[in-house]
Length: 259
Image 1 (tube, rainbow, N blue to C red):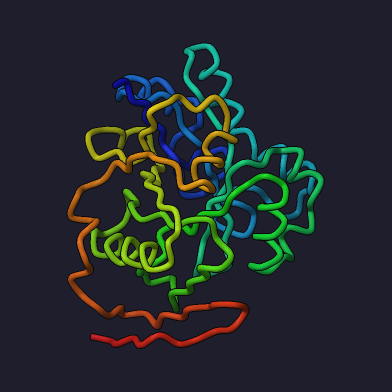
Image 2: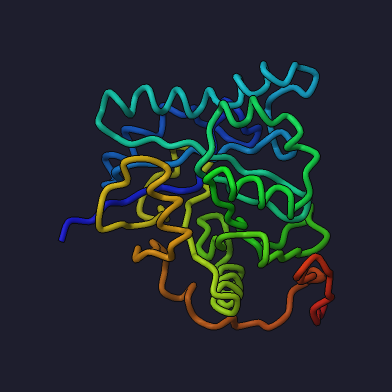
């Protein structure tokens, strides 16, 4: 049976300050690697963005979408699918948003002021979905791990920039709450395209980002690209960062140990 591969987590230097490659750079290389499409998910204005905050909202949104638009322009020429998404941040926790478009952003400048519950309800009602990205990642710039299982549609359980242990914890967490699972490379440079790419495999091609959203919300059958060891139980049952599980708008401190 023919299968169709898609990258779900990708950053461009048009909008993400940490990215080294422009949107169009990725398209021919992913196509050569056997992928049928990708989703551009640049860091939003509350994350590691390269878009000046002093600009008007419209100008910021127009600039933010350039990486996607440049990739899509080339993708259309090469018969390669390019879809739009973004990665929003609440500080310690980040979320991939799929299924909405530039016009939605233009129409909702107040999105920067929404809390988790408001963001989820609006995105869900407007036909999108929210995936918590790399939830158990530990980095020097993070002070805690925040988990919100009631306001996400799924969990990124394979992340190409994660240590495997962080993904093992994410996989166990997603299983415990029966949440959809995704895999993505979290790629920032086209020069890193190779055998370590992540992503998702579908039995049918995705004709639009809405097909991807439907697969997530309906828990459809698809496959995750990632090492099998990332789907094993966690080897270490504690984190160096405190873990907070937020359920039903309440916050509970989970047991956390420090080395």
